[in-house]
Image (cartoon, rainbow, N blue to C red; front, side, top):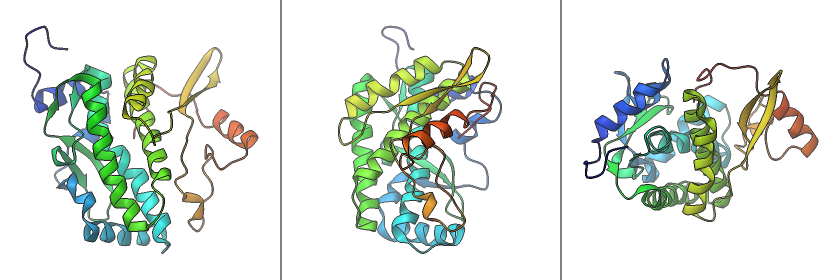
Amino acid sequence: MSGAGMPPPTPDELTRQVLAQLPGQLGDVLRPAPSDNQLVATRVTDHDWLAEQIRLRAGIWNIDDQHVLATLWWYSASAVLLNPSLASLALTGHSLSPRLEDLVLHHTPSSRFRGSHSTAVLDGGIDHLAAELRASLATAIGAVAAFTKGRPAPLWAIATDAIAGRLLWAGQATGRVEHATALAAGLVARIGPPLPRPRYADVEVGHNRSHRLVHRASCCLLYRVPSETMCTDCPRRAAVDRALGLSTAAPPLRHGERGP
């Protein structure tokens, strides 16, 4: 945090502060590789561009169901859109901007995302961040829902899980899980409905050791892809099966071993 009267950090300075705290190669999600296409995130609202991404995903997943493909696409895209602002909030107390016009996506020709970075810093604290996140999510979700002609509520649920997951990732990477995950509830409450509240589950991974996981509110529809099955923590599972899946989903990990 800057001292009283000190100017906020620049986007590059704030990004460097975040990267300095991330071990190993975890910071790669915030810095583009030379081979990446760098796209301003407003592209997600371009119907023709989105249609091409879904077409490319059809080749990856070997399915032509546009609703399933768009949902899977949003499952990955939502985390990428959120990562710079949430990682900076959790690790520095300042927030990189989540406005679509300020976000740059690190994109591959296959339609996959490697990460993203932001070109602006927000002032006004967590309330300002919540307002900007709500605007960005509403715009992106509106574009995806218009493409699929489906309900936006499941896409908002995916966004909640992305918020919970990105903050958990930052906390696990730096050994500050309690701090990072506590931010999720306050931030989602400030963003407001239709986001469901974020939830976590702590599972035992050894003697007097536990590992925190996102207790998902959303389904990515992966089970509708040929040769794929329902995720172990999918909310569509029966409660007993889901509890068993959560209990076996967390092997012993070192801080930061599981990246995005």
